[in-house]
Image 1: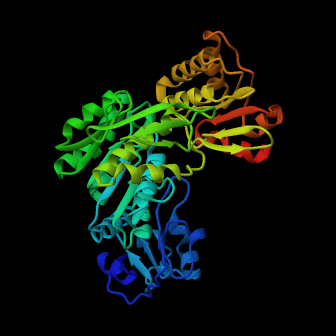
Image 2: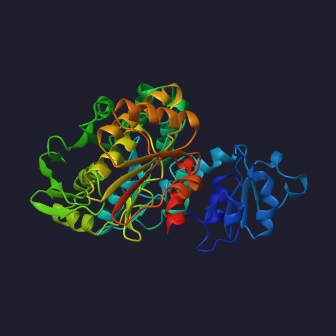
Image 3: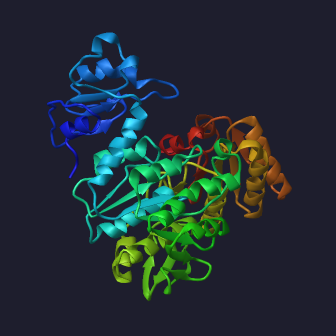
Length: 452
């Protein structure tokens, strides 16, 4: 069961009589706070939550976790203030406290691409027969993950969490807090290169999940089609695996794709049971395979897995297919790196449509290799012979995309500095299939609303 606020106060070294309604939640944004909630004041890049402690108390916060020296002097002796030396560390400790009250399996999922989709697919599969909780949305950081544990883990048999990384050491800290029993590394690709220093460094950071599992006798699910994941799997003592290349999932259990339909959706066969996957593309097939391997490891039967896969409805912004006014939108706009961009472009190329139109947004956080990786992505788009390619982002990124298109014998249809500017230039036509793919800050997700 979830801890009470009084138990949380005691854990932080305070003996207080605090109200604890069953529906309280922990939050770090005072604008989301309701009466009876727990507010945790964190210093961020743009704002310091300590400046909003007074507002949180006025809004009825049952308790506030904060560093007293950062709070207005008049509030430092408020009986609802739980003083701590480091509020970020306190949040991790509270996440660990919530984890300690859960005796069932905890699955951690990391990787360069597909973390959220794999998490959602796995939770859907397991949820057909088990009481399952999962981390909320993309709350996968050293702030979001413990918040999700505090708010989402109650009387559940299995918890599924996403573990993200934007700087060195983050995966290790998340493992120490959440103490996973099972883990998946979906893949290791060029992403967050600015914060880590290169692909080898990314592999070492992602590999901290397998290192933790190896040290604590946990089970790792290995993507045998990714050589960098295979190297990190050397840390494991217990493992299962999946391979699209060798039609294998969960040891000797057979799995293969029987081809795609006109909407690029795979027909998957798992131990003789067939299912048409509800989300298009090879990337979703890989996420489904990873989830299947973990579900088999936890004792589910292939027939039950296939049944739940058929009912999965996808995650917003992650190859979500929407029928618009006579045309189809493939919204994969949540984020992008070269590998996920390539996968999305290949999915569009398999889609049967009057015109296949790619809207490509700038890819961020690629470090010194950024322009080269944009050029390579542009060349791939040209090789796939799409009907139109529109570019959105900075002049440098668009120029690199355009150079790659030219190298592949094609040219950009047009470009814009923002999604709003592009909406005025591109009007999809009946029969089109339009892909949106780019880093979050390019704002491509707004195009669906602008075109609606």
